[in-house]
Image 1 (spheres, rainbow, N blue to C red):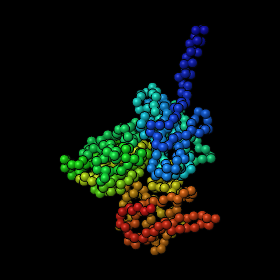
Image 2: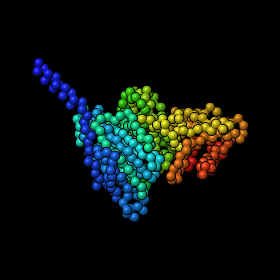
Image 3: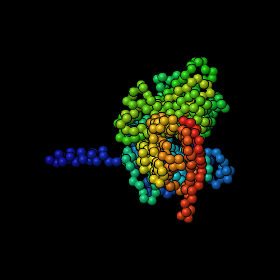
Image 4: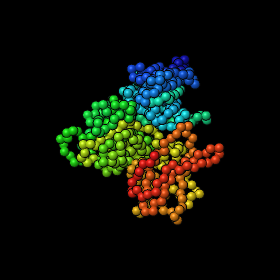
Length: 492
């Protein structure tokens, strides 16, 4: 009887050990002195003893402060991580002052897994990321280097607060504090998808029908940088960072009239419960007869693909941002960036900072002046009910003949959405589209794309409403009143 009781008690203790949580780990954060440029991270007190907080800002050096160059500093630590089958949860809160040129990025073993997004100044944003090691399998934990990379261009600062690594998967949501604005983002663990191209091509491969390969390049090593190609990469904004590009060699001994360059992603996870957001930066320079398309492959069926997103022609010698939402239920297994070009040695398309985020591209309750109108909530914009006719959310071609857009600007395909107005009942009728209210502490640049096509097109005016001493003041910022054809034009 005593022997039987001993066996039961021994098994119970084993059960406790097997299910007890792995304690949180202190990565012993420190500055990476080999890579820091005139900047250092400085620690300050956190809300609890097990968390760490740091601030990045310029020293009181007038020469550095007056410089317009970008400087960076890296905060590094080591944590014992398992494979993506048993991820750990990295949580922190960050705040960045200044414009979008000031950035915060995270690297796991030199692989770029996350980058800060432009948010309203003085907004604190809480992030939770499932992180794992790409060099181990199963539950085995390997010492893995984690790095926070901060980049500043002016006398501003980045606050990184309450960093904590918990060796359990991240919860599905974060509870918001009533005193601050908090948004949560969880990284989708797709090994080899997120890529800055600083080390290699990650998990991206050449497509089967490719006639002109994608390859990694630095601006400093581009032999024709004075003619074509990026002057800086996007990740670091300098001439030594890498991006991926495709262009004809000089001389070109193949003499093909048309080239196709396809870059294929690693396989995406099956049966995801929620949407994912594919995010990237691209440059199309000297490319009048070139198209960049994004294809979404369902169930590994690479035949009869239709572009989900498209750009064509010369987009200028600077980086542009693109993103598309991958909704559940469509069985999307791959993302393909496809370049189609007619023969031209002065034509180049480049990509950088490819990222896949677990969650929608725009949160369902995210109201802001910045809007692509891909979400049904249209970011809180309102068609003024006091107008004589409404603004409508459209997709594909507008219903009227010989007028209106044939596709949107965001995706460049019939799947994209835009806001439009049709013919009014009488001349002089007005329709107003009103944004949400924002209170920026500094001036902001308003940029948008507009389409005015058809006879008797009328006038498009943009006003700003300011409230001073409870008196509304409306100021005309911009106005156009001409048929410009079936094209989207940029205004700023």
